[in-house]
Amino acid sequence: FVAAILFNIGIVYSELNDFDNAMTSLKHCLRIRGALHGDEHILYAQTIQKIGDVFVGMSDFREALESYNWALEIVLLEPDHHRVDIGNMYDSIGNIHYSKGEVTDALRCYEDALESKRLGLGNNDPELAVTYQHIGNCLSDQGRTEDAVDHFREAIRLRKLDQFDSDEREADILAIEGVLHNLSGRQEEGLQCYERSLELLVRKVPDRRKKIADLLHLIGCVYLMNGEHKKAMKLFEESLRTRRKMMGFIHLDVASTLFNMAFLHQTRNRPKKALKCLEEALKIRKLRLPDSEKVAQTNEKIGSLAKALGDRGRAEAAFEEALRIRKAIHGNQHETVAFVYHEMGDLMDDMGDYKEAMTRYVEALDIRRKCFGLDHEAVASTLYSMGFTLYNMDQSKRALNCFDEALIIRKNSLGEKSKQVGDILNMMGFLHATRGELDDALSLLLDALGIRRYQNDHVKASETLKNIGNVHREKKYHQKALACYEECLSIRRDELGFDHDKVAD
Image 1 (cartoon, rainbow, N blue to C red):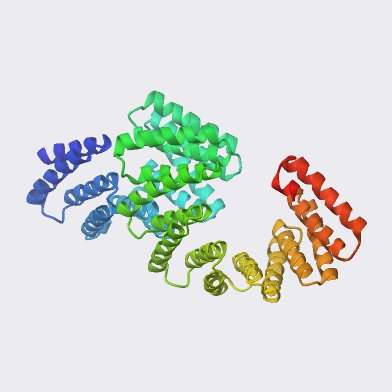
Image 2: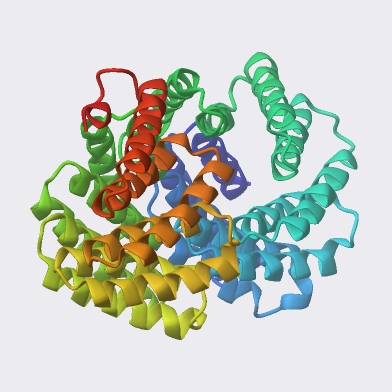
């Protein structure tokens, strides 16, 4: 009885985010249960699992994973008697993988959890709902939308079977319905569901502060995607305050909010504020998730922002660290490694180190061709960047070869009227003009102009008109050149105002 009371006290302290007292109670409970029942008893395993939950609350995933694996070893000694416990432990391990950005590993754990729970509970127990929801999240992240929708719908069906008709249950159902609306492209309806869920929790279940903070964060993300930046920032700031108050300043949920705030600052052209948020998020993630996907991802974002700010040293260091982690996780021939090589190539090109840029691009291109084949958009992206670097190196013929290969891929993969095809045609036309190949240049530029007009991209159309005007001028067709320049000027004044640099140009 003493052990049971200590166990319940530990759970309550954990729900109150008082993790020190929770750990003290649960460890005391574990000693008693070990003495009474031995270290292979189900009660002993359940206590270890709860200790793992406390470690998760503290963002100590290494200790949490050790606890869950320890508990799992015990219950797997008699699997037929502990199907639900086994499922719960796989769920917990899956949550750790998901928090670390390891979606494939998380999905595998959740599917094992579902299989075990269904053996113990059947197919209609509300306890299965959370696992279906976890699987839905993974499938959504992988772009498997139809499968994700099926799992979210099943999660709702199962939650509605719960005989305890509580306000929290209703709030959970509304949140899942919000996800379904978003996956179906109905963002407004999804937002309404999230906001109703939040209102219900705040009004009826205010002690569920973690769920409230999570919903604030989620609604902030929706506003961010909808371009409502002030609303998004207000919600992120409220979520950040709540999470810091509940879980301290070095919790992974805090890092997640800081990461999204950085994206918002970047969108609002505040790169220094964005970089500050990312640096703080990185410190937390390095502490809690060393050498993980999330740390690599944060370093990549820091590298991109530092590059935009002209801080080559900071950018290069961040990309090198991201590259080291990506290689450690995935090996040397993975797309994530190629992505970092490509970003490093862009950095070197921006800094005028064209030889090093080409080295990085070639490494990225080699991996992408091995991963995706010769006609993938990722291959075209690297070829396109290589073309610009070769142009900067005064190697226009090699640059045209890269652009031509990228053009063939993008016409096939994106369509002949895509913006990306128009961009390549415009650059190829410009290059032919610099080589004195004026007829080829004019043909390519007219094709680019047609695409840019088709796309209603007026600013880019003005750029192509200027290039066409230059070709006509070189060919001594002065009236045609003047007509192109005047149309270019008219567009730029309409789109950019009368005092813009491009108008003066």
